[in-house]
Each structure stands twice: as structure tokens, then as C-alpha cells.
Figure 1 (cartoon, one colour):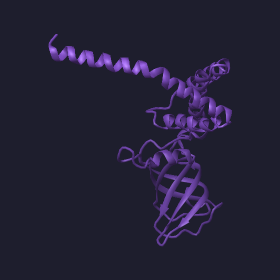
Figure 2: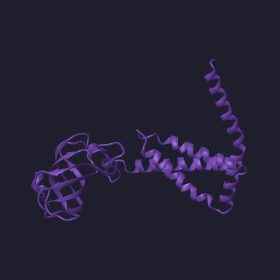
Figure 3: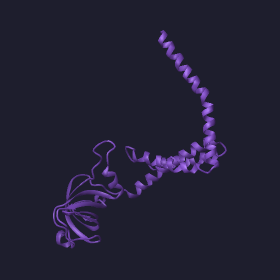
Figure 4: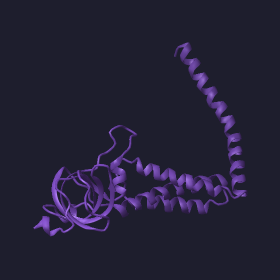
Length: 226
């Protein structure tokens, strides 16, 4: 080993030695701060922060994880936290981890509860449904419709809600049962990393397709579907 190599090893060893010397002091500082948070009853205020961290982890996952994993981890760390109540550091760390996985679990349950079919590809569909929202514009309107039926699509693949636009102002209001023929496509994902992900917001709103009406809306569905 050359001189420069030995010097690098010695410098690394010195750095580790200094870190080891500081470790007990940092741990004492952490213990003191944790004890003060507990004494002043502020420690629980960090639990929602940890839970939100779990929610963020869930939203950034590449795919929806199995539900049993966050359930098991939340129970495990909650149990360990309960058993380590007499050890402030272990108690704080395990309780924070329980909150993280609890937030992750809450987001998984929310996702499972709102899960609904999403359109697989561009389709032209004749459908019926109930108007839930109407957003009138200077030209035309945008509406959210709860779908009742869609021609040519299996019931298991029909979106729960769709959002469509019309070229002309429709003579309908929220609560009307309508029929229409529309060109639908899946909600779009973010075009750039970190950009707005409309598909995610649409998923949690139960909107499985977006598009435009190809014919004027009819409040009597028999007029179009016959």
C-alpha cells in the first residue's frame, strides 16, 4: 500500500474514532430531548407527521402493495413500542415506526375502498347515467356522470364515473338521468416526473374515464339507446 493509501486509511480511522467519541453525547442529547417531549406531552404531536410520511411512501410506491404487509408491520411495531415503554429511545423509535406503517396502512385501506374500474383504452361508447356535477362554461360544459350502463362493455369494466365535455350548453342539471354517446379515454398520468398526476386524482374521485360527448345529451335515455 502506498503512502497516499495509508494516509487515507488513517484519516478514515480517525474519522470513525471521532464519530464513536461523539456518539454517546449525541445519544444523551437525543434522550434528553425525547424525555422533555414526553414530559411536556408534546411527543404525540410528532405521530401525525410520521403517519403522513407513511402516506407519502404509499403514494410513491411503483405498485399497490399487499395489504397484509402494513397490517403486520403496524401490529409488530405497536407491540414492540408497548413492551419498550421503560426505554425512551426504543419506545420513541418503535412508536414512530408504528405511526409510519399505520399511515401507510390507512392509505392502502383508502385505496382499496375507492378502487373502481379504469378505462383500458380509447373507446366510443353509448351509455346512460346520472349527472352528478355540471360545470357550465362560455362554450359548452363539463360534467361528471355516474354511469349506469355502457353498450358493448362488460359490467366489471365499466367506470363508476366519467367526466365528459360538450360543445354546446346542455339542457340538463345535476340529478338528471341522461343518455349520450361519447369518445372516452383513460385519465392521463403526469407528463413529467413530479408533475401533476390527473390519473391519481381521478382514481380517488372514482372517475375512470374522460372524454367528450359526440351527440347532444338526452334527458330521456330511451331516445338514444333504442
